[in-house]
Image (cartoon, rainbow, N blue to C red; front, top):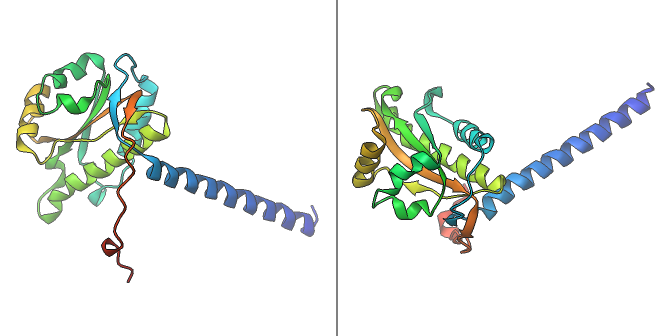
Length: 196
């Protein structure tokens, strides 16, 4: 290959790489901008195991403190989600979903000291990844916050028979959306952003 042909090939490869990167950026940012919580699910539609596994991978790909995984994920199908549907503080937020992921913090994995409390932030990052991945896959999802509301923590812990050291952080109902919250994202006031 002549040097001029090699340079042309490299230039084309760089252009293609830049295009792919730009497309990926648009896809990721677009998903973030377009995400809306699902407020009602198709009660007959289940999510395939393959798709649920992809959501688990998305959640467990979130950044963590000290390179320690502080969470345990419970993947619930239709037969197990019924245990949560009985809870008065949780049932309305499940919105008829046939599947859910329960994110629990494993507080004992974090050791001692100030960094011990970062488990909640790490679990929040996992929840965010799951929500965005569900949206990108054409699924509906929403975030039912359990932690730090004590009555929810107690109800979910009892219903799921969670062992000591596992704190239910969030429930992410997942399914085929029937009704999606169409409200636009609230505008972030410029006073909430400071460029230094």
